Length: 486
Image (cartoon, rainbow, N blue to C red; front, side, top):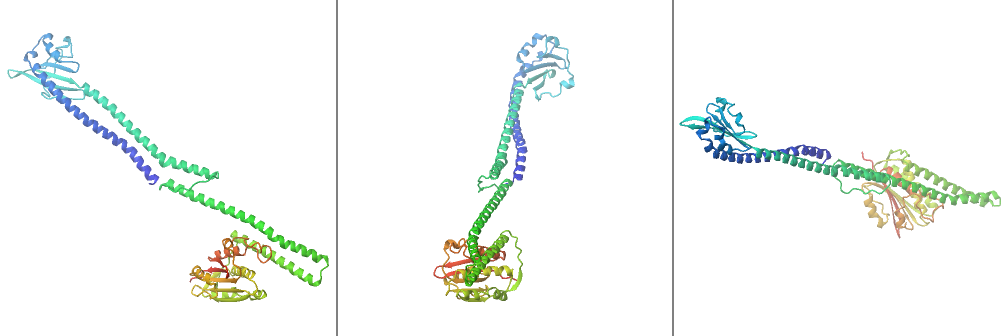
C-alpha cells in the first residue's frame, strides 16, 4: 500500500475509532443506566406503596401538635422526605423542617394539585403526590420525595469509568499508530539512511531482495539501482585504469625490442665497417622496425579515440557487391610473397551503411592476422555472403553449422586460414587490448590492438565479430553486418 493511502487511512481511523469507542461506551452505559433506572423506579414504587397506608390517615391532615406526626417522622430518613398539606394548601408537616418552620408555608392550590398520583422523576429525586379522602372529600395531600443518592453515586462512578476506558482506548490507538508509523516509516527510512552512510563510506551494501510496494520501497529500489550503477562505473573505471597500466607496460615491453634493434643497427651503420649489401639489409630492418612502431602508435591513437568515443564515424550508403569487391581485394601480393594460397569469394547484394575507411581497417587487421599466422604452402580463404546466399563451401565443416546460426539475418565477411589452432584460453580474451602470444610480442607486424579496435568498429556499425579455431583445421574470423532496409 502506498504511504499516502496508508496515512489517509491511519488519520481516518485515528479520528473515527476514538469517537466510535466513545459512542459505544456511551450507548452501553446509557443502556445500563436505563436498566438501573427501571429497577430503581420499581423499588421506589414499592416503597411509595408501602408508605401510602400510613400517610392516608385523615387525622394527619388536621392542625395537630408536632408530636402527633412522630409516627410519620419515623418513616423518613436522610434520603426520604415526607410533606403533608391540608386541602387548602397549608403545609402541616415536613420531615426536613423544624417545628418552628411549620405553618409558615402554603402552597398554591393550582400547583399543589398538579401531577397527582404520578411518580415524578428528575436527576436527583423521585416524588409522588397523592390526595387523601374522607367521606368523599379531599382532606389533604401528602408528598413523598425519595433522593437518588445511589444512582447519582453510580453516575459519577460510571462517568469516571467512561473517562478511564476512553483514555485507555485512546492510549492504545496512539501506541498502535506509533508502532505502525515506526514500522512503516521510521524503520525503513533509518535502514535506508544506514545503507546510504555505509555506501558513502565504501562499505559493502547488500541489495534488498524483498521491498515494500510503497514509496519508500521504490526509493530503496532506486537507491539500489543507483548504487549498482555507481559500483559498475567504479569497476569500469578501475578496469580502464588497469587497462591503461597494462597498455603502458605492454608498450614499454613491445617498443623495447625494436628500439634496441634500431639503436644497434644505427650504431653499426655509423661505424663504417659494413659492406654495401649489409648496409642495404640494415636499412631495410630499420625501416621495418620504424614502420612497426608507427603502426603501433597509430593503433594506440585509434584505440584511444574509440575508447573515449571521440571518433566521428562517417557513414555512407554503399552497394554491397561493389563494396565487398573492393574490401576483400588487394591481398594477393602479400599472400604470394609468403607463398600462401589465396581464395577470394563473395556473393553479396543489397545496400549497407558503413564508414568505408574504418571497415577497411577491420579487413586489414583480420587479413594481416591471417597472413601472419599462416605458413608457406598453406591456404587463406577470404569471402562474404548475404543472408540470402549460402556460405562458401570451403568453410571448415566443424565451424560451418555454428557460423550459419551466428550469421542469421545478416551479412558476413570471413577470413579463414590453415594453421595452428588458437588455444581455448586465448579465444576467451583475444579481443582484449594487447592480448597476443608471447612468441609474437615485439617481433613486428602486430601491436596487440588490432582485434580490439576491429571489435569496437563493428559494434559502432551495429555488427558483431567472432573468432573460431579448431585443432587440425585452423582459424576463422567472421564479421556480421546488417543490411540497410529501405
